[in-house]
Length: 240
Image (cartoon, rainbow, N blue to C red; front, side):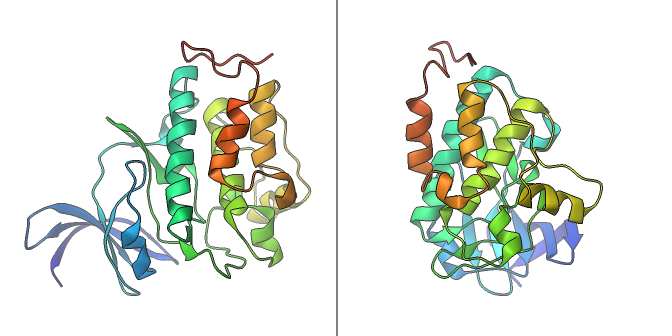
């Protein structure tokens, strides 16, 4: 193995992630076992972690220094605008490369010195023929993930809507003490709406029916840009 495993960062029924060192270059990398689709190495975007090597056994990703979004709490208006644009841009790149992320949540998003980065592509699946996936966090998964339906880009947009909700409010959109209660909250769409045009836009991303959501990340951003005075020129959010 060309990578020296240094420290186990996380371990679950889905696998494990290690901080590691490339024995040829000395570079620090992140290694996830098991791996995923080899095609993930084709994704190139400044707001998506770069997959350096990937096969069914192991995924090697660049090492990124930063704080996860779940540790930052509610973000201010200026950072929220940056967050929205960068994450939608990164998600568009993932989708255009032919994959769904399927595990978008605050602890898989890093704030770095250069902005926000989508990380952990360990649950990613090819867009073509993707069906229900129960490996993500139930707090951020789209209803169709629990219902066995086919999935497309709108499943990731729902998850990202839940991330934006958390980033604005500091609380999860769909809550429950047990996983089953959270799933029921998604399926029955029990969520407290955020008032104003920005809240309405986030609500579109989190629509119960996939047909009521934007079809693509680009369409989602276009809808936001058409909202009246959501972002002022100084970066402040105005809900009215």
